[in-house]
Amino acid sequence: MKELWKLFALFFKIGLFTFGGGYAMLPLLKAELVNKRRFVSEQELLDMYSIGQCTPGIIAINVATFIGYRQKGIRGAITTTAGMVMPSLIVIILLASVLQNFADNRYVAYAFSGIRICVAALIADVIFDLARKNIAGYMSVFVFIGALALLVGAGLSAVWIVIIAGTVSLAAGEIRRKKK
Image 1 (cartoon, rainbow, N blue to C red):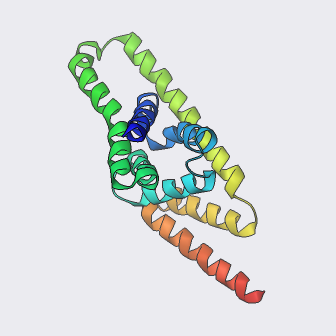
Image 2: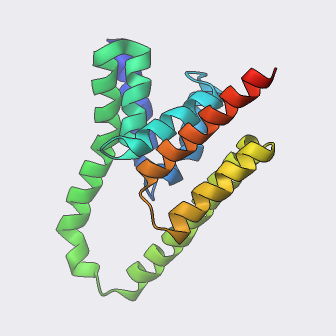
């Protein structure tokens, strides 16, 4: 039971101190789950993010559920999910009760503007880190450019892009294997 409380507290903290959604949460998840606690490797965390992107629901919640299940089974999954959701629930209830009174306040608008810029920087950092660690070789460059073109140029759903990228990479890997 003590370990479940520790998991809850960890994911409560992650949920409490991360603004901007799942992608902005990745640096904190990486610091806590990969570097500090070594629950998963960096590649495993990225794989969980990829799967979380393709499954219904919020990416961060999906990843929290994966980690909790991996650590403590069903009880761990429920615990980490609750820990991740609870801060947002509390903050949303508090904000909903007072924000309407301050919605037109210019200082509140300035603060939210700064928070949005900070979140953009956090997401950019994650993107550059992911690209630097995962784009190596002609095939990965091809898949990256193709996925980016489908996402930005064609507006294709991220689910389809992940399926296409996985299929192309799988086929390329099999071709390389057969050549050896």
